[in-house]
Length: 415
Image 1 (cartoon, rainbow, N blue to C red):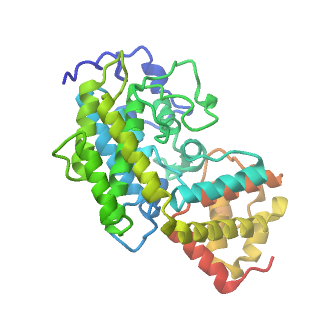
Image 2: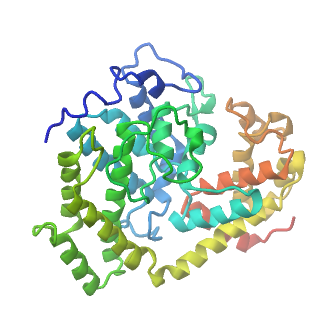
Image 3: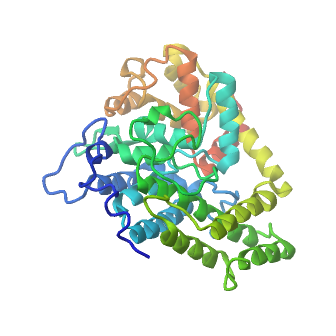
């Protein structure tokens, strides 16, 4: 295994595209004694963001918020971080960029896993004639939604580097490809209109995409076994499948290790980030096994219906509050019917609207303390407001969505 093979194409200062990779739409405030690289700074900006913290209460696959041993979205991100970092170091790529993309790749993921994403996608198509997919929404979150305080406690947009933003929108691990290579630098992020259309612009982004798939297929099996989703026959099928390629494979940890080492042994700049034929076939077989026995398991049907009920009701309730420039005031007047839910949304919405339509008091103070892009302007159209509702719901944790729904059940809504 030669870890010098990718040294000349890594996203470092010697790369001819370095300035493009580290470009920020708006320069960050600087500290004279800061020793971090641009990508290391992105990593810590994501680490301190509220969107990252909320991942610990978002479903990965199995809704089980009271079971500490079931993987959450945050743990999944940590697994992708671990797998991609190991590969990046093994290949001689920029590990700081790799870690930054990995930790940020699922920011803004919908609550309740991919079912939540599906429900929001249907609402976006119905009401805005737009598609919704979590890679694109992740980019929207880091560009437009997530805020951090600067040195003077003023909230501003994250303004991550181009290479990290690109890695977020291009990380789709659902598409089965082997031999990943960076796309041409002339294809902009704006050219993405569907998941997996293009590869990342950096080798590091390609590594994260491959690591995402390795991480989720492995851990999802462990959770399915823990919850009794897979019976002994299915578990035996999985073991036989794994041992076709490695007689020593006894659990998903060993399988994941084999895939990581195989990538490091078979990847090069000419062939791309790739698995050998036998391990690529194994990964496809495991993924197909997961879809057949886990993701489409009929035992998940009650959960799917519960998720659709919650998200749809939250959406319809908030949309019913629209009153053009008077929306925030009306929301304040009606908050007695859902105090926590309406207050939270009003405070959140006030950050992204022009302060001219924000009522005086705490909401106005919050609005004036945010020097971010005012993406919803003065709520002059219902479409702008519906986009705000979708953005808000997509950022929720499972816990908060359930609490908001239960509050609606308790108080009822009269608007």
